[in-house]
Amino acid sequence: MLTSDTITGKGYDSVLKLMHGLHHFEKEVHPINQDFFARLVKKQSPDAIFITCSDARIDPNLLTGTAPGELFIIRNAGNIVPAYQEHVGGEAASIEYAVSVLGVKDIIICGHSQCGAIRGLLNPDSLADMPSVSQWLKHAERTKRILSENYKDQDADCVHNIAVQENVLVQMENLRTLPCISRQLWKREIEIHGWVYEIESGRVYIYDPVDEEFLPITLGSNGYELVSGDGLPTTV
Ligand code: ZN
Image 1: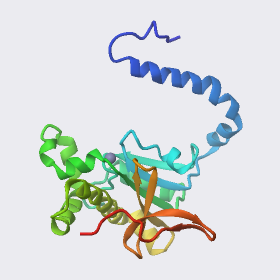
Image 2 (image 1 turned 120 degrees about the horizontal axis):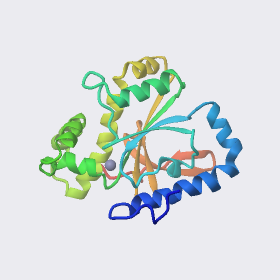
Image 3 (image 1 turned 180 degrees about the vertical axis):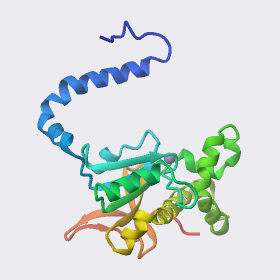
Image 4 (image 1 turned 90 degrees about the vertical axis):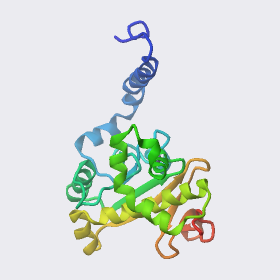
């Protein structure tokens, strides 16, 4: 059995914390949820594909009030979906499986405030010692082009917020280039959603294709609705 005596030395404190978590899960959480996990053993049937950044501050299940099995989660630096012509990798493979085999009908691309990948995209000099990150962010190059063409005179914070939103829209476009997605879109059997999570407020802004802005939701008398006029700032 691993204890704090068997794991010692610099750098192991974090792993030890995880060991405590593993032990608690196996001994406390799993036993009182046996029926739930027995159902998960049989199959996965997620409600949506959730594509977001690897940033450790984002917890898709916490954010959406969902349990294991309810979201098919794909994560990488900058919540990027490379366009099909440019790169077929893990993202395309995972999406193809979820759509073709699991029959998922909704795909959410969720960016977030304070995104390090977006900062890197806007400040390429900071990536000089990270060739892999630099290469990866080429899949968001169009986001940068949109910014330089339309938002030249904004201050740094504003540019960052706009870049997060524009990047979600660019990745939504990239997603449409995947053959499994374009087929389903043509048949109107799949829906793509753009979200931005604001860590500071706990709010998630949802892209409204009619108003062409990211809007917060509220619970009205007719159910959930988007609040016009209270969107994330994108005005030039
Ligand atoms: Zn990020």
